[in-house]
Amino acid sequence: MNWNLDDLYKGFDATYDADIVKLEKLLSDYKVLVKNEAGLSDLALLENYLRSQEDLEKLATSLFAFASLTTSTDVTNQVALGYMAKLQQLLSSVTKENVQMSRFIANLDLNQLEKQSELVKTYRYGLELTQKGAKHLLSEAEEVIYSKMRQLASGQWGQLQGLLTANLNVEFEGKTITLSEVRNLAYDHNNDIRKKAYDAELKSYEPIADAVAMALSNIKREVTELNAMRGYESALEKTLESSHMSRQTLDAMIEAMKDFRPHFAAYLKAKSVYLGHQKALPFYDLFAPIGKLEKTYTFDEAKHIVLDSFYGFSPRLGNFAKKAFDHNWIDAFPRKGKRGGAFCSNQPQIRQSRFLLNFTGSLSDVSTLAHELGHGYHGDVIQDEQPLNWDYPMPLAETASIFCETIVMNKLFNELEKDEEKLSVLEISLQGDTQVIIDILSRYLFETKLFENAKGPISKDQMKSWMLEAQKEAYTDGLDPEFLHPYMWLNKGHYYSAGLNFYNFPYAFGLLFGKGLYSLYLKDKESFLKNYDRLLGMTGKASVEDVAASMGIDVTKKDFWVTSLLEVKKDIDLVIKLMQKTV
Image (cartoon, rainbow, N blue to C red; front, side, top):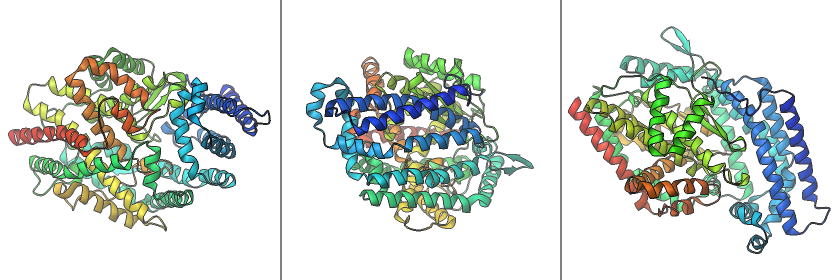
Protein backbone atom coordinates (compact mmCIF):
# COMPACT_ATOMS: atom_id res chain seq x y z
CA MET A 1 0.00 0.00 0.00
CA ASN A 2 2.62 2.54 -1.04
CA TRP A 3 1.41 5.43 -3.16
CA ASN A 4 2.20 5.74 -6.84
CA LEU A 5 3.60 9.10 -7.92
CA ASP A 6 4.00 8.23 -11.62
CA ASP A 7 1.33 10.68 -12.73
CA LEU A 8 3.52 13.42 -11.34
CA TYR A 9 6.90 11.98 -12.40
CA LYS A 10 8.39 8.51 -12.67
CA GLY A 11 11.53 9.66 -10.88
CA PHE A 12 14.14 12.38 -10.80
CA ASP A 13 14.84 11.65 -14.44
CA ALA A 14 15.22 13.48 -17.75
CA THR A 15 11.53 14.44 -17.77
CA TYR A 16 11.79 15.97 -14.33
CA ASP A 17 14.94 17.86 -15.27
CA ALA A 18 13.32 19.07 -18.51
CA ASP A 19 10.43 20.51 -16.50
CA ILE A 20 12.88 22.32 -14.25
CA VAL A 21 14.30 23.89 -17.41
CA LYS A 22 10.75 24.89 -18.38
CA LEU A 23 10.29 26.42 -14.95
CA GLU A 24 13.51 28.40 -15.36
CA LYS A 25 12.21 29.69 -18.73
CA LEU A 26 8.86 30.71 -17.21
CA LEU A 27 10.66 32.57 -14.43
CA SER A 28 12.96 34.27 -16.94
CA ASP A 29 9.97 35.36 -19.05
CA TYR A 30 8.28 36.65 -15.91
CA LYS A 31 11.29 38.82 -15.10
CA VAL A 32 11.16 40.30 -18.61
CA LEU A 33 7.42 40.92 -18.29
CA VAL A 34 7.80 42.83 -15.03
CA LYS A 35 10.32 45.19 -16.62
CA ASN A 36 7.54 46.09 -19.10
CA GLU A 37 9.97 47.38 -21.68
CA ALA A 38 7.20 46.95 -24.27
CA GLY A 39 5.20 49.65 -22.51
CA LEU A 40 2.08 47.55 -21.94
CA SER A 41 -1.00 49.25 -20.53
CA ASP A 42 -1.92 48.56 -16.88
CA LEU A 43 -4.61 46.12 -17.96
CA ALA A 44 -2.40 44.27 -20.44
CA LEU A 45 0.43 44.01 -17.92
CA LEU A 46 -1.94 42.74 -15.24
CA GLU A 47 -3.52 40.13 -17.52
CA ASN A 48 -0.14 38.89 -18.74
CA TYR A 49 1.04 38.70 -15.13
CA LEU A 50 -1.99 36.62 -14.12
CA ARG A 51 -1.50 34.20 -17.02
CA SER A 52 2.19 33.78 -16.18
CA GLN A 53 1.27 33.05 -12.58
CA GLU A 54 -1.20 30.40 -13.70
CA ASP A 55 1.52 28.64 -15.69
CA LEU A 56 3.99 28.88 -12.83
CA GLU A 57 1.42 27.59 -10.34
CA LYS A 58 0.75 24.45 -12.36
CA LEU A 59 4.36 23.54 -13.16
CA ALA A 60 5.93 24.47 -9.82
CA THR A 61 3.21 22.58 -7.92
CA SER A 62 4.03 19.34 -9.76
CA LEU A 63 7.78 19.70 -9.40
CA PHE A 64 7.71 20.59 -5.73
CA ALA A 65 5.04 18.02 -4.87
CA PHE A 66 7.04 15.13 -6.31
CA ALA A 67 10.12 16.07 -4.31
CA SER A 68 8.15 16.79 -1.14
CA LEU A 69 6.05 13.62 -1.30
CA THR A 70 9.21 11.58 -1.93
CA THR A 71 10.83 12.94 1.23
CA SER A 72 7.62 12.31 3.23
CA THR A 73 8.11 8.58 2.85
CA ASP A 74 11.91 8.73 2.93
CA VAL A 75 13.12 11.67 5.02
CA THR A 76 16.76 10.91 4.28
CA ASN A 77 16.40 10.96 0.47
CA GLN A 78 19.21 13.35 -0.41
CA VAL A 79 18.27 13.57 -4.09
CA ALA A 80 14.75 14.74 -3.26
CA LEU A 81 16.02 17.14 -0.61
CA GLY A 82 18.47 18.55 -3.13
CA TYR A 83 15.73 19.18 -5.67
CA MET A 84 13.54 20.82 -3.02
CA ALA A 85 16.39 23.20 -2.22
CA LYS A 86 16.91 23.92 -5.93
CA LEU A 87 13.22 24.67 -6.45
CA GLN A 88 13.16 26.98 -3.44
CA GLN A 89 16.14 28.83 -4.86
CA LEU A 90 14.51 29.15 -8.28
CA LEU A 91 11.22 30.45 -6.90
CA SER A 92 13.00 32.87 -4.59
CA SER A 93 14.91 34.25 -7.60
CA VAL A 94 11.84 36.28 -8.59
CA THR A 95 11.30 37.78 -5.14
CA LYS A 96 12.24 41.24 -6.40
CA GLU A 97 9.79 40.95 -9.29
CA ASN A 98 7.05 39.72 -6.94
CA VAL A 99 7.55 42.78 -4.76
CA GLN A 100 7.45 45.05 -7.80
CA MET A 101 4.22 43.48 -9.06
CA SER A 102 2.61 43.69 -5.62
CA ARG A 103 3.38 47.40 -5.49
CA PHE A 104 2.09 47.81 -9.05
CA ILE A 105 -1.18 46.01 -8.16
CA ALA A 106 -1.55 48.07 -4.98
CA ASN A 107 -2.05 51.20 -7.07
CA LEU A 108 -4.58 49.78 -9.55
CA ASP A 109 -8.28 50.63 -9.68
CA LEU A 110 -9.71 47.12 -9.68
CA ASN A 111 -13.28 48.38 -9.99
CA GLN A 112 -12.49 49.84 -13.38
CA LEU A 113 -10.25 47.04 -14.60
CA GLU A 114 -12.67 44.20 -13.86
CA LYS A 115 -15.25 45.90 -16.08
CA GLN A 116 -12.81 45.41 -18.96
CA SER A 117 -11.47 41.94 -18.14
CA GLU A 118 -13.01 38.61 -17.16
CA LEU A 119 -9.57 37.50 -15.97
CA VAL A 120 -9.35 40.38 -13.51
CA LYS A 121 -12.92 39.66 -12.39
CA THR A 122 -12.04 35.99 -11.80
CA TYR A 123 -9.11 36.90 -9.56
CA ARG A 124 -10.58 40.02 -7.96
CA TYR A 125 -10.48 38.68 -4.40
CA GLY A 126 -6.85 37.56 -4.64
CA LEU A 127 -5.87 40.90 -6.16
CA GLU A 128 -7.54 42.69 -3.26
CA LEU A 129 -5.51 40.57 -0.83
CA THR A 130 -2.35 41.52 -2.73
CA GLN A 131 -3.26 45.20 -2.37
CA LYS A 132 -3.80 44.71 1.36
CA GLY A 133 -0.53 42.81 1.86
CA ALA A 134 1.54 45.28 -0.14
CA LYS A 135 1.73 47.67 2.79
CA HIS A 136 3.69 45.05 4.76
CA LEU A 137 6.36 44.52 2.12
CA LEU A 138 9.98 45.30 2.86
CA SER A 139 12.23 46.88 0.25
CA GLU A 140 13.01 44.80 -2.81
CA ALA A 141 16.56 44.16 -1.62
CA GLU A 142 15.41 43.13 1.86
CA GLU A 143 12.77 40.77 0.48
CA VAL A 144 15.37 39.12 -1.77
CA ILE A 145 17.80 38.68 1.12
CA TYR A 146 15.14 37.22 3.40
CA SER A 147 13.82 34.78 0.79
CA LYS A 148 17.34 33.39 0.40
CA MET A 149 18.29 33.35 4.06
CA ARG A 150 14.99 31.74 5.08
CA GLN A 151 16.00 28.60 3.21
CA LEU A 152 19.10 28.38 5.40
CA ALA A 153 17.36 29.42 8.60
CA SER A 154 13.77 28.44 9.46
CA GLY A 155 13.59 26.10 6.47
CA GLN A 156 16.51 24.06 7.76
CA TRP A 157 15.37 24.20 11.39
CA GLY A 158 12.05 22.72 10.30
CA GLN A 159 13.80 19.96 8.38
CA LEU A 160 15.91 19.19 11.44
CA GLN A 161 12.79 18.55 13.53
CA GLY A 162 11.39 16.27 10.82
CA LEU A 163 14.66 14.39 10.45
CA LEU A 164 15.18 13.84 14.18
CA THR A 165 11.62 12.67 14.86
CA ALA A 166 11.26 10.49 11.75
CA ASN A 167 14.50 8.63 12.53
CA LEU A 168 14.00 8.50 16.28
CA ASN A 169 14.54 5.02 17.77
CA VAL A 170 12.17 4.17 20.59
CA GLU A 171 13.03 1.28 22.89
CA PHE A 172 9.88 -0.59 23.81
CA GLU A 173 9.76 -3.98 25.53
CA GLY A 174 13.14 -5.04 24.18
CA LYS A 175 12.45 -3.90 20.61
CA THR A 176 13.35 -0.79 18.66
CA ILE A 177 10.32 0.81 17.04
CA THR A 178 9.51 4.15 15.38
CA LEU A 179 7.97 7.18 17.06
CA SER A 180 4.77 6.74 15.01
CA GLU A 181 4.48 3.14 16.18
CA VAL A 182 4.92 3.93 19.87
CA ARG A 183 2.46 6.84 19.69
CA ASN A 184 -0.10 4.56 18.02
CA LEU A 185 0.09 2.28 21.07
CA ALA A 186 -1.90 4.94 22.93
CA TYR A 187 -4.93 3.27 21.28
CA ASP A 188 -4.03 -0.24 22.47
CA HIS A 189 -6.63 -2.20 24.42
CA ASN A 190 -4.06 -3.19 27.07
CA ASN A 191 -3.72 -0.55 29.78
CA ASP A 192 -0.24 -1.74 30.72
CA ILE A 193 0.98 -1.31 27.13
CA ARG A 194 -0.49 2.20 26.95
CA LYS A 195 1.34 3.28 30.11
CA LYS A 196 4.64 1.69 29.02
CA ALA A 197 4.33 3.26 25.56
CA TYR A 198 3.77 6.69 27.14
CA ASP A 199 6.86 6.27 29.33
CA ALA A 200 8.93 5.03 26.38
CA GLU A 201 7.78 7.91 24.19
CA LEU A 202 8.68 10.57 26.75
CA LYS A 203 12.05 8.95 27.42
CA SER A 204 12.85 8.77 23.70
CA TYR A 205 12.54 12.56 23.34
CA GLU A 206 15.26 13.33 25.88
CA PRO A 207 18.30 12.88 23.56
CA ILE A 208 16.84 15.18 20.88
CA ALA A 209 14.92 17.68 23.02
CA ASP A 210 17.67 20.32 23.21
CA ALA A 211 18.19 20.31 19.43
CA VAL A 212 14.47 20.43 18.62
CA ALA A 213 13.87 23.17 21.20
CA MET A 214 16.62 25.21 19.56
CA ALA A 215 14.94 24.65 16.19
CA LEU A 216 11.54 25.80 17.46
CA SER A 217 13.00 28.76 19.35
CA ASN A 218 14.89 29.99 16.30
CA ILE A 219 11.90 29.59 13.97
CA LYS A 220 9.66 31.66 16.25
CA ARG A 221 12.38 34.29 16.78
CA GLU A 222 12.77 34.63 13.02
CA VAL A 223 9.01 35.05 12.58
CA THR A 224 8.84 37.63 15.37
CA GLU A 225 11.67 39.72 13.93
CA LEU A 226 10.30 39.61 10.41
CA ASN A 227 6.75 40.48 11.45
CA ALA A 228 8.04 43.48 13.39
CA MET A 229 9.94 44.64 10.31
CA ARG A 230 6.82 44.26 8.20
CA GLY A 231 4.70 46.28 10.60
CA TYR A 232 2.52 43.51 12.01
CA GLU A 233 1.58 43.81 15.66
CA SER A 234 1.93 40.06 16.16
CA ALA A 235 2.28 36.70 14.47
CA LEU A 236 -1.42 36.18 15.15
CA GLU A 237 -2.34 39.28 13.14
CA LYS A 238 -0.34 37.94 10.20
CA THR A 239 -1.93 34.49 10.53
CA LEU A 240 -5.44 35.92 10.60
CA GLU A 241 -4.71 37.94 7.47
CA SER A 242 -3.37 34.82 5.74
CA SER A 243 -6.41 32.90 6.99
CA HIS A 244 -8.83 35.43 5.43
CA MET A 245 -10.42 35.58 8.87
CA SER A 246 -11.22 38.40 11.30
CA ARG A 247 -10.08 38.63 14.92
CA GLN A 248 -13.75 38.99 15.84
CA THR A 249 -14.44 35.52 14.46
CA LEU A 250 -11.45 33.98 16.26
CA ASP A 251 -12.30 35.60 19.60
CA ALA A 252 -15.93 34.49 19.37
CA MET A 253 -14.87 30.90 18.75
CA ILE A 254 -12.16 30.79 21.46
CA GLU A 255 -14.49 32.24 24.10
CA ALA A 256 -17.12 29.64 23.28
CA MET A 257 -14.51 26.88 23.51
CA LYS A 258 -13.39 28.10 26.92
CA ASP A 259 -16.98 28.18 28.16
CA PHE A 260 -17.40 24.49 27.34
CA ARG A 261 -14.24 23.28 29.13
CA PRO A 262 -16.20 22.01 32.17
CA HIS A 263 -18.23 19.68 29.95
CA PHE A 264 -15.11 18.12 28.44
CA ALA A 265 -13.57 17.81 31.90
CA ALA A 266 -16.68 15.97 33.08
CA TYR A 267 -16.29 13.50 30.20
CA LEU A 268 -12.59 12.92 30.96
CA LYS A 269 -13.25 12.36 34.66
CA ALA A 270 -16.05 9.91 33.83
CA LYS A 271 -13.66 8.05 31.53
CA SER A 272 -11.09 7.94 34.32
CA VAL A 273 -13.62 6.29 36.62
CA TYR A 274 -14.61 3.87 33.87
CA LEU A 275 -10.96 2.83 33.42
CA GLY A 276 -10.49 2.34 37.17
CA HIS A 277 -8.29 5.32 38.03
CA GLN A 278 -8.53 6.94 41.45
CA LYS A 279 -7.74 10.42 40.17
CA ALA A 280 -8.45 12.38 37.01
CA LEU A 281 -7.55 10.81 33.67
CA PRO A 282 -3.81 10.38 32.97
CA PHE A 283 -2.67 11.66 29.58
CA TYR A 284 -1.64 8.17 28.47
CA ASP A 285 -5.28 7.04 28.66
CA LEU A 286 -6.75 9.90 26.62
CA PHE A 287 -7.05 7.55 23.66
CA ALA A 288 -7.78 4.35 25.55
CA PRO A 289 -10.54 2.44 23.75
CA ILE A 290 -13.59 1.74 25.86
CA GLY A 291 -16.75 -0.29 25.45
CA LYS A 292 -16.66 -3.71 23.81
CA LEU A 293 -15.77 -2.93 20.21
CA GLU A 294 -12.30 -4.40 20.59
CA LYS A 295 -11.99 -5.04 16.90
CA THR A 296 -9.12 -3.72 14.87
CA TYR A 297 -9.56 -3.09 11.18
CA THR A 298 -7.66 -4.22 8.16
CA PHE A 299 -7.08 -1.51 5.62
CA ASP A 300 -9.49 -3.26 3.26
CA GLU A 301 -12.21 -3.17 5.94
CA ALA A 302 -11.57 0.52 6.54
CA LYS A 303 -11.82 1.12 2.81
CA HIS A 304 -15.27 -0.49 2.56
CA ILE A 305 -16.56 1.39 5.62
CA VAL A 306 -15.48 4.68 4.11
CA LEU A 307 -16.88 3.90 0.66
CA ASP A 308 -20.26 2.82 2.05
CA SER A 309 -20.46 5.98 4.15
CA PHE A 310 -19.38 8.31 1.36
CA TYR A 311 -21.76 6.83 -1.21
CA GLY A 312 -24.53 7.26 1.36
CA PHE A 313 -23.82 11.00 1.26
CA SER A 314 -23.41 11.55 -2.47
CA PRO A 315 -22.26 9.64 -5.58
CA ARG A 316 -19.56 12.24 -6.29
CA LEU A 317 -17.98 11.79 -2.86
CA GLY A 318 -18.09 8.00 -3.13
CA ASN A 319 -16.66 8.02 -6.65
CA PHE A 320 -13.82 10.26 -5.56
CA ALA A 321 -12.82 7.95 -2.69
CA LYS A 322 -13.05 4.88 -4.94
CA LYS A 323 -10.70 6.55 -7.42
CA ALA A 324 -8.20 7.25 -4.63
CA PHE A 325 -8.21 3.58 -3.58
CA ASP A 326 -8.17 2.18 -7.11
CA HIS A 327 -5.31 4.34 -8.38
CA ASN A 328 -2.88 3.93 -5.45
CA TRP A 329 -3.07 7.50 -4.19
CA ILE A 330 -2.62 6.34 -0.58
CA ASP A 331 0.57 5.48 1.32
CA ALA A 332 -0.99 3.58 4.19
CA PHE A 333 1.39 2.02 6.70
CA PRO A 334 4.20 3.23 9.00
CA ARG A 335 7.78 2.31 8.23
CA LYS A 336 11.29 3.43 9.07
CA GLY A 337 12.17 6.80 7.58
CA LYS A 338 8.55 7.75 6.87
CA ARG A 339 7.26 10.86 8.58
CA GLY A 340 4.59 10.46 11.25
CA GLY A 341 0.99 11.60 11.25
CA ALA A 342 -1.26 11.92 8.24
CA PHE A 343 -1.89 14.45 5.51
CA CYS A 344 -3.50 15.01 2.12
CA SER A 345 -1.62 16.69 -0.73
CA ASN A 346 -4.04 17.98 -3.37
CA GLN A 347 -2.65 18.15 -6.90
CA PRO A 348 -5.32 20.03 -8.89
CA GLN A 349 -2.96 20.54 -11.82
CA ILE A 350 -3.26 16.78 -12.55
CA ARG A 351 -6.76 16.50 -11.00
CA GLN A 352 -5.56 14.09 -8.30
CA SER A 353 -4.49 13.94 -4.64
CA ARG A 354 -2.09 11.88 -2.52
CA PHE A 355 -2.69 10.71 1.05
CA LEU A 356 -0.12 9.80 3.67
CA LEU A 357 -1.32 7.69 6.62
CA ASN A 358 0.29 5.65 9.38
CA PHE A 359 -2.49 3.07 9.54
CA THR A 360 -2.29 0.45 12.29
CA GLY A 361 -5.91 -0.73 12.41
CA SER A 362 -7.57 1.29 15.16
CA LEU A 363 -11.01 2.82 14.79
CA SER A 364 -9.25 6.16 15.05
CA ASP A 365 -7.25 5.22 11.94
CA VAL A 366 -10.51 4.61 10.08
CA SER A 367 -11.63 8.08 11.11
CA THR A 368 -8.29 9.55 9.97
CA LEU A 369 -8.68 7.87 6.58
CA ALA A 370 -12.09 9.50 6.17
CA HIS A 371 -10.66 12.84 7.32
CA GLU A 372 -7.83 12.89 4.79
CA LEU A 373 -10.09 11.75 1.95
CA GLY A 374 -12.33 14.69 2.88
CA HIS A 375 -9.39 17.00 2.20
CA GLY A 376 -9.01 15.26 -1.14
CA TYR A 377 -12.68 15.80 -1.98
CA HIS A 378 -12.21 19.50 -1.27
CA GLY A 379 -9.37 19.39 -3.78
CA ASP A 380 -11.58 17.56 -6.26
CA VAL A 381 -14.10 20.40 -6.11
CA ILE A 382 -11.55 23.22 -6.10
CA GLN A 383 -9.75 21.88 -9.19
CA ASP A 384 -12.69 23.15 -11.28
CA GLU A 385 -11.72 26.69 -10.28
CA GLN A 386 -9.02 28.71 -12.02
CA PRO A 387 -5.42 27.95 -10.89
CA LEU A 388 -4.87 31.05 -8.77
CA ASN A 389 -8.05 30.23 -6.84
CA TRP A 390 -6.90 26.72 -5.91
CA ASP A 391 -5.36 27.75 -2.60
CA TYR A 392 -7.70 28.25 0.34
CA PRO A 393 -7.04 29.47 3.90
CA MET A 394 -6.31 27.16 6.81
CA PRO A 395 -9.63 27.52 8.71
CA LEU A 396 -11.64 26.46 5.66
CA ALA A 397 -9.17 23.69 4.84
CA GLU A 398 -10.72 21.50 7.56
CA THR A 399 -14.34 21.90 6.46
CA ALA A 400 -14.67 18.90 4.14
CA SER A 401 -12.35 16.69 6.20
CA ILE A 402 -14.31 17.11 9.44
CA PHE A 403 -17.55 16.66 7.52
CA CYS A 404 -16.37 13.34 6.08
CA GLU A 405 -15.20 12.16 9.48
CA THR A 406 -18.66 12.91 10.85
CA ILE A 407 -20.35 10.98 8.05
CA VAL A 408 -18.29 7.84 8.72
CA MET A 409 -18.52 7.89 12.51
CA ASN A 410 -22.27 8.56 12.49
CA LYS A 411 -22.86 5.68 10.08
CA LEU A 412 -20.85 3.29 12.25
CA PHE A 413 -22.72 4.45 15.35
CA ASN A 414 -26.19 4.13 13.84
CA GLU A 415 -25.55 0.58 12.62
CA LEU A 416 -24.73 -0.71 16.11
CA GLU A 417 -27.29 -2.19 18.52
CA LYS A 418 -25.40 -2.96 21.75
CA ASP A 419 -24.72 -0.11 24.18
CA GLU A 420 -21.10 -1.17 24.70
CA GLU A 421 -20.46 -1.08 20.95
CA LYS A 422 -22.18 2.29 20.59
CA LEU A 423 -20.04 3.57 23.45
CA SER A 424 -16.86 2.52 21.65
CA VAL A 425 -17.70 4.30 18.41
CA LEU A 426 -19.15 7.45 19.95
CA GLU A 427 -16.28 7.77 22.40
CA ILE A 428 -13.72 7.48 19.61
CA SER A 429 -15.48 10.37 17.90
CA LEU A 430 -15.51 12.32 21.14
CA GLN A 431 -11.79 11.67 21.59
CA GLY A 432 -11.27 13.46 18.30
CA ASP A 433 -13.56 16.33 19.28
CA THR A 434 -11.68 16.70 22.56
CA GLN A 435 -8.38 16.89 20.71
CA VAL A 436 -9.65 19.43 18.21
CA ILE A 437 -11.30 21.66 20.81
CA ILE A 438 -9.48 21.22 24.12
CA ASP A 439 -6.02 20.05 23.04
CA ILE A 440 -6.05 22.61 20.22
CA LEU A 441 -6.88 25.23 22.84
CA SER A 442 -3.80 24.11 24.81
CA ARG A 443 -1.65 24.40 21.66
CA TYR A 444 -3.05 27.85 20.94
CA LEU A 445 -2.25 28.95 24.50
CA PHE A 446 1.24 27.43 24.28
CA GLU A 447 2.07 29.10 20.98
CA THR A 448 0.76 32.42 22.27
CA LYS A 449 3.18 32.11 25.20
CA LEU A 450 5.97 31.09 22.85
CA PHE A 451 5.57 34.22 20.73
CA GLU A 452 5.31 36.46 23.79
CA ASN A 453 8.81 35.30 24.73
CA ALA A 454 10.38 34.87 21.28
CA LYS A 455 12.82 37.76 21.56
CA GLY A 456 15.58 35.46 22.86
CA PRO A 457 16.50 31.75 23.12
CA ILE A 458 13.95 29.47 24.76
CA SER A 459 15.12 26.30 26.47
CA LYS A 460 13.48 22.88 26.34
CA ASP A 461 12.69 23.16 30.07
CA GLN A 462 10.83 26.43 29.54
CA MET A 463 8.89 24.91 26.66
CA LYS A 464 8.00 21.88 28.74
CA SER A 465 6.81 24.13 31.55
CA TRP A 466 4.64 26.26 29.25
CA MET A 467 3.15 23.18 27.63
CA LEU A 468 2.16 21.78 31.02
CA GLU A 469 0.63 25.13 32.00
CA ALA A 470 -1.32 25.25 28.73
CA GLN A 471 -2.62 21.71 29.21
CA LYS A 472 -3.77 22.48 32.74
CA GLU A 473 -5.57 25.63 31.59
CA ALA A 474 -7.25 23.91 28.65
CA TYR A 475 -8.13 20.56 30.24
CA THR A 476 -8.80 22.16 33.69
CA ASP A 477 -9.30 19.31 36.19
CA GLY A 478 -10.07 16.69 33.55
CA LEU A 479 -6.51 15.33 33.43
CA ASP A 480 -4.27 14.07 36.22
CA PRO A 481 -1.62 16.82 36.65
CA GLU A 482 0.98 14.17 37.46
CA PHE A 483 0.61 12.55 34.04
CA LEU A 484 0.48 15.23 31.35
CA HIS A 485 2.60 15.48 28.17
CA PRO A 486 5.39 18.07 28.41
CA TYR A 487 6.76 17.27 24.94
CA MET A 488 3.69 17.93 22.79
CA TRP A 489 5.58 20.81 21.21
CA LEU A 490 8.31 18.45 20.00
CA ASN A 491 6.27 15.96 17.98
CA LYS A 492 3.83 18.34 16.24
CA GLY A 493 5.26 19.41 12.90
CA HIS A 494 2.80 22.31 12.66
CA TYR A 495 4.95 24.41 14.98
CA TYR A 496 7.99 24.17 12.73
CA SER A 497 6.97 26.21 9.70
CA ALA A 498 7.80 29.92 9.66
CA GLY A 499 4.96 30.45 7.21
CA LEU A 500 2.27 28.58 9.16
CA ASN A 501 2.08 30.02 12.64
CA PHE A 502 -0.87 29.21 14.90
CA TYR A 503 -1.66 26.18 12.79
CA ASN A 504 -3.99 25.02 15.55
CA PHE A 505 -7.18 27.10 15.78
CA PRO A 506 -8.08 26.31 12.13
CA TYR A 507 -8.77 22.73 13.24
CA ALA A 508 -11.22 23.94 15.87
CA PHE A 509 -12.84 26.19 13.29
CA GLY A 510 -13.11 23.27 10.87
CA LEU A 511 -14.67 20.95 13.44
CA LEU A 512 -17.23 23.41 14.73
CA PHE A 513 -18.01 24.80 11.30
CA GLY A 514 -18.38 21.24 10.05
CA LYS A 515 -20.74 20.41 12.94
CA GLY A 516 -22.86 23.42 12.00
CA LEU A 517 -22.91 22.34 8.35
CA TYR A 518 -23.85 18.78 9.29
CA SER A 519 -26.84 20.10 11.23
CA LEU A 520 -27.96 21.93 8.08
CA TYR A 521 -27.47 18.72 6.09
CA LEU A 522 -29.73 16.75 8.43
CA LYS A 523 -32.46 19.40 8.21
CA ASP A 524 -32.61 19.51 4.40
CA LYS A 525 -30.32 17.06 2.61
CA GLU A 526 -31.42 17.90 -0.93
CA SER A 527 -30.92 21.63 -0.52
CA PHE A 528 -27.62 21.11 1.29
CA LEU A 529 -26.15 18.95 -1.47
CA LYS A 530 -26.89 21.67 -4.03
CA ASN A 531 -24.99 24.26 -2.00
CA TYR A 532 -22.17 22.25 -0.40
CA ASP A 533 -19.91 21.96 -3.43
CA ARG A 534 -20.51 25.62 -4.20
CA LEU A 535 -19.32 26.48 -0.67
CA LEU A 536 -16.13 24.42 -1.14
CA GLY A 537 -15.54 26.08 -4.49
CA MET A 538 -15.75 29.52 -2.86
CA THR A 539 -13.01 28.84 -0.31
CA GLY A 540 -10.18 30.09 -2.53
CA LYS A 541 -11.88 33.32 -3.53
CA ALA A 542 -13.74 34.70 -0.50
CA SER A 543 -13.21 35.43 3.18
CA VAL A 544 -14.08 32.93 5.90
CA GLU A 545 -16.99 35.12 6.90
CA ASP A 546 -18.37 35.36 3.34
CA VAL A 547 -18.02 31.63 2.72
CA ALA A 548 -19.99 30.92 5.91
CA ALA A 549 -22.57 33.55 5.00
CA SER A 550 -23.25 31.66 1.75
CA MET A 551 -24.89 29.00 3.94
CA GLY A 552 -26.63 31.52 6.19
CA ILE A 553 -24.04 31.25 9.00
CA ASP A 554 -22.58 34.23 10.93
CA VAL A 555 -19.24 33.07 12.34
CA THR A 556 -18.46 36.45 13.92
CA LYS A 557 -21.07 35.80 16.62
CA LYS A 558 -20.44 33.56 19.61
CA ASP A 559 -23.97 32.15 19.25
CA PHE A 560 -23.02 30.05 16.21
CA TRP A 561 -20.07 28.47 17.99
CA VAL A 562 -22.17 27.76 21.09
CA THR A 563 -24.77 26.06 18.90
CA SER A 564 -22.09 23.82 17.37
CA LEU A 565 -20.58 23.05 20.79
CA LEU A 566 -24.01 22.09 22.09
CA GLU A 567 -24.02 19.37 19.41
CA VAL A 568 -20.75 18.08 20.89
CA LYS A 569 -22.22 18.32 24.38
CA LYS A 570 -25.00 15.94 23.31
CA ASP A 571 -22.31 13.36 22.56
CA ILE A 572 -20.57 14.10 25.87
CA ASP A 573 -23.78 13.57 27.83
CA LEU A 574 -24.55 10.33 25.97
CA VAL A 575 -21.01 8.97 26.40
CA ILE A 576 -21.08 9.70 30.15
CA LYS A 577 -24.47 8.01 30.40
CA LEU A 578 -23.29 4.93 28.49
CA MET A 579 -20.07 4.72 30.54
CA GLN A 580 -22.00 4.85 33.80
CA LYS A 581 -24.43 2.22 32.47
CA THR A 582 -21.78 -0.23 31.26
CA VAL A 583 -19.04 0.22 33.87
